[in-house]
Image 1 (cartoon, rainbow, N blue to C red):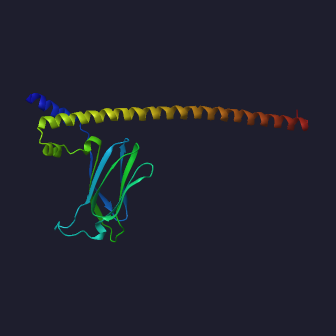
Image 2: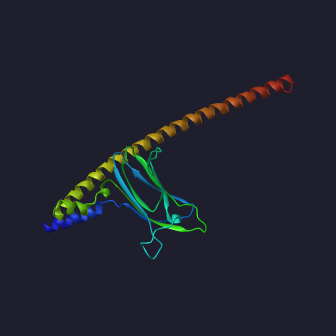
Image 3: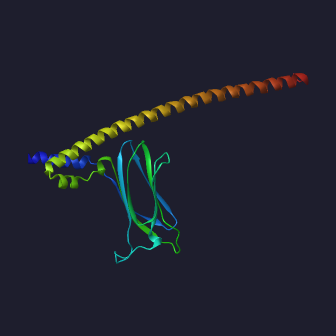
Length: 213
């Protein structure tokens, strides 16, 4: 039983996809965007915070160290728009597949300064807090590991179907592009022959009128 528990734990660790947990810098007046490819009906949560440069962490941040945050879908739908914040989070369910983008912008300031941001973005199975599941449900570690493994495998299964669908879309797009290129080449060839025929006819008529041939 102990061996099975360790096997489940190891497999679960290997299969769990890593979330986008980042720390990056933004210079005054600049924008940095981070994208995440999501499938429809996927739940996502993002948390961000400006790192306090002061030694006294309880000291309030100045306005120069606050952010403007905008989260949008590939179709332009806005899920969050926050101005002059030092931290925050967003939670939503993707209604359409595609790239979702979180953009952070720092206000203009002189002299230029760098803001350090902690950003954690979790999607799908990454979103679930397994430690709290175990703590709140008072279940043993084995059950949590099995449940985590089940959700991870289910998520990977859905991802496989998602990527297969994207692959079929790309193949169809390639075939349509090749077909259009062949049609364009045929039209260009016919146009070239037509122009060459007109030139030949014009030169023949010109030489005949001037009795050069």
